[in-house]
Length: 174
Image (cartoon, rainbow, N blue to C red; front, side):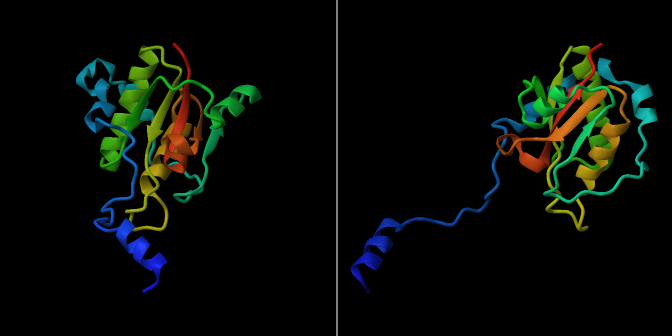
């Protein structure tokens, strides 16, 4: 063995492979849904008006998503895409079923509006564990948000905030 190889072997002695290469976005995942403790925020009207059957083109796990309601200023749209609007709260939907995710998301939007929150971050994931070639939750969230009257716009986040596995969501204020 050469000297370089020996040096390298000595440097990596005791190093073990990582079991998980995913980033833990939150130190306390149980704190990602603090609003769930208060049931005063359920909005049955919003839940009944959101359909799971809206026809939109499905997106892949790595595809960028952007949506803006008519009338949203171009400057605001650009700030949203660039992550320059301060995020006041966040929600992580990892590990939830579709029905749980839908209910949780709608409750969170209602909660955020009542708290006068303008921008939230939603983590939906990229669907790598899905059995299909398209991420189910990401596409459902894309559909639900387009139907929700409180949503002014949304955009996939910057890489530091989750990239195409998360969204910045701009809300109407009450």
